[in-house]
Image (cartoon, rainbow, N blue to C red):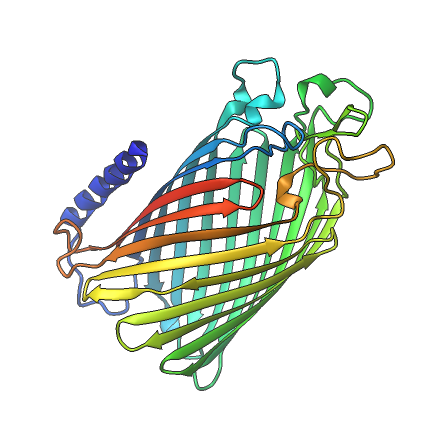
Length: 395
């Protein structure tokens, strides 16, 4: 965990130097040149443990740690007709170690799969007509790690209602991925085993949203998504053990249709308390249905200190292709022992602390927010995890 704080404060040092050298420009209400609007630095440490690894066929360690660091830079300018141009550049780097992935080669003490680094930059542009309440957006992203490469793109449009109390939005996203076919070592070279080259996986997401201010205390938002996936949807290094003791490579259909429907609400209970609620229903053509219920209650302790306890409950049915260790038979066309596709319920509980001092964090005026969050996750099939994150905002 110490590494998280070292990285966060190293980035903090860069921001401090930037703030000291910045020329004051407090009079420019609508900058005609690009101006830094906000910088967010986020570091997190995540660890998990369990005993249902899909790499070893549904039994075995799921121990994993992940250290994540990301910087998000937002700049803005106003063009002709007071059109607002927003640019958002984010670069994230994760380093993780996974005991289960190390078992791709059962005979190795340690392999290249035991740890990896993921790099995921993105660039988004939003053109906002504040007078008409209309925005247009476009963005690109990528994610790279040892056995996976993803390229993404998105376009979006939103329009506020005449009274500005409602807003309709539509967004389309596409992800074009390449999966390296890295098979369990004992299956390599066997017939019908994918163990060389790459396979494609494409995901397309369409989203509709509508948000409404009911009154000064109550706001709601509704969202409907349609997600279509095609291509290689298995993971080539996942083992599946059949009832006869034989081992096979995970095999799943080459298409999947997902439909999530969600509602979110915020209620301002006076000046110091907000109640935020969220519910999502999900279904897909693999047989999974799930329900998510989430509540968070930010409470302002003083004018610059607030705490946010939160809790999320989740439950899902099993995919029709899932069975545990040595439960599949030779008549199965598709099979997996990945417990992410099993029947389970889970809880996620935690607390956030948010500081917004008048004189800035550590006396640096532009560092106007520091947030620390901790959460504990527990799943009914004995997977559990902890995560702590730090967010520092420059504005």
